[in-house]
Amino acid sequence: MGRPGIAALAGVLAELVLPRSCAGCGIPGSMLCPRCAAQLADPRTASPRRFPWGFPPTVAAGAYAGPVRPAVIAFKERGRAELARPLGAALALAVAVVVSAVPGPPRPVALVPVPSSREALRSRGRDHVRELTARALAELAAAGVPASEARLLVRRGRAQDSAGLSAAQRRANLAGTFQRSGGVPSGALLVLVDDVVTTGATLTEAAAALGADASCTGRPVLAAVVAATPRADPEHRRMQESRVAGVRSENLRRRSVHRLSGPGRSD
Ligand SMILES: [Zn+2]
Image (cartoon, rainbow, N blue to C red; front, side, top):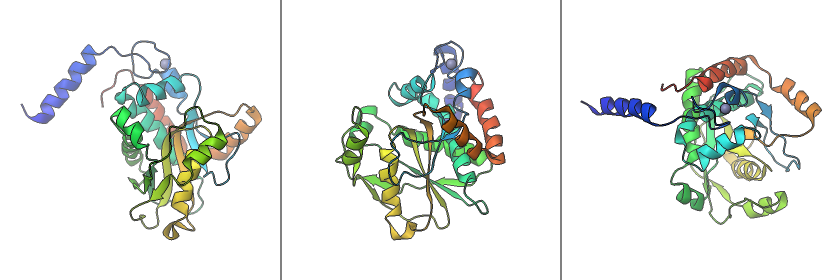
């Protein structure tokens, strides 16, 4: 039996042996149940409470609240790598929505993953943002959105983990953290991608590092994330929702809901 055959069989066995439960709410059956998946197909613009100057226009596929939080943490910190599929589909949706807001004819999209710190990569043993990026690219390709990965940022490597820091402390901690590396694809829309946005400090620094370079000047730097800390103000929310509605994104939303909620699917 060739390698692909063995891989397929191993996949089938894993489906039989591994207990599956929803990473959002814990009910048995699928890695993400339809109710929880629907929360990741609810795009909105991310608006950190203290909007940092230079924060890029950012769309999140859902709110970083309720069942979305444990699902993201399960993927990021608890080794549930299989969640890359639904969370990557959610990221693809956010990308499609944010680029649909740019006027003019559709342009190719370059996804720029926000690099994790060296310590985070070491302790997790994997690069979860790049895993999400890879899945998002597959989803975008299937939806007919031309996109590629552009690893344009590197960490200078002195920032500490931002957990527990205030917004101002995060900005200070991150100042000068990112540096641009490598060539920018000509004519492409640059979309920073990350798992979640909370204070907006990381995306602001990353956008500054991209925009500071002469070859990027004049291009909009956009951002897309799986989930964003929600704003409490419902009026604000409704206003944002009406702004991000678009035909292309609606198609991808339907597609992603379909893909997200299939119980135990293995495609
Ligand atoms: Zn659930």
